[in-house]
Length: 371
Image (cartoon, rainbow, N blue to C red; front, side):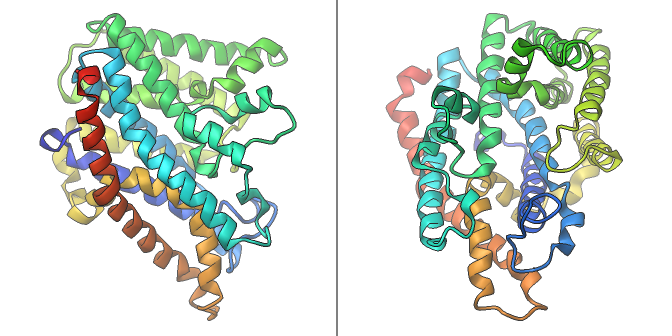
């Protein structure tokens, strides 16, 4: 959304999402039981408190569903919409992936954290926003991984952009209905695979590579929120069908426990319900969320994309480097707070002096293709 039409509370939501993800990566992701080793200079005592922070990504998907429908309505063509998305995403991941690759090499010369060292081939899935599994199929035995593990969600986002844009420009007036029908087909495929054909190679291959299938209903929730927020017309069956799909999704996740690296349980359900309630309040009673309208956290929401791209591998290594200076056992668990502030500072500088200028230049240079 541009400055004139930005909805501030969504930036507050982005802040909640990104802080959840960061705390997960700085206290829980790289220590038992989530990982085989402890990569932190402190104990894994915080792992239990922050192990569900990875669900912040799901919250991002709901936000994306809302925002993308807004963007689609402001776009005049499918190609223009995709080009605007590319301008938004590519410059930042190009910079952050290069910085991450170099910083990991410099800060971990002895390869004490080998999983943080993907080969240079990791730039292929990272910079193309594609599923790393595809590249491993093309080049077997090369163990191609993203430059930073956090990038796993970006192919899902981009797949959503491509498909939602395609469905939107096929029939704008019936987009919500058509998208829910599409979501229904994907959800039914999941259900068939889970309950009747778990060993079907074709279905397994499709679902393994089409990662959007596990998260499509989060995007759909955001779309419905957008339609209700702006009082767009909805078919009478849209919301009831979506509710039924949620039940199918619940069954899928409880059956497969796909929320790696934690087991799907009631805590996850409660957190996802909280996210749903926040969006329901935003949709119908936004005044109740006035307490979230704090400029500082909204600014962090604005720059959250860059924070997401840079925070994990570099941040964990930086925590360990600072622990060599701050050796007090009492202070060690608080080092991530300092690193978080440094990541926020980097993202702010990047946004001001790199993202915005590059974005403005590209939009002007490619304006005829966007318009």
